[in-house]
Image (cartoon, rainbow, N blue to C red; front, side):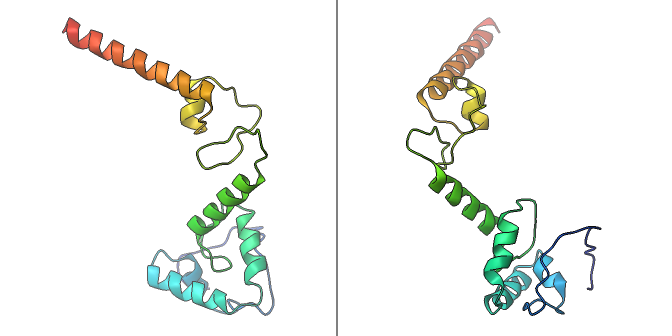
Length: 144
């Protein structure tokens, strides 16, 4: 491997003996250069382990680089889509359709903002907080 990238000790990356990236310059898969990323994705397109490699990275949100032909944004979109598809009727979901965990308290402006919850209770709480904020801002202007 050449370049600046040093893999962490104990890194559990998949090791496919006949992968398209085996023996190649791994800098391509971890480059910020778009041309390098396109080349890495093209190489992944010919790999017999593309799907397994992509699934490995999708299951690990912290991984960066090109894995199975997907960059971090591609993998995040897949995770969002899968979470939305897992939502059941009656689940409270965020603006992407992902279920909001049961431990989250609804009816607060922070749940509206932090969890992107658009249930009635959180929407009303956020609107009331915004109204109160604007009233305080107007009071401050009037006092000045």
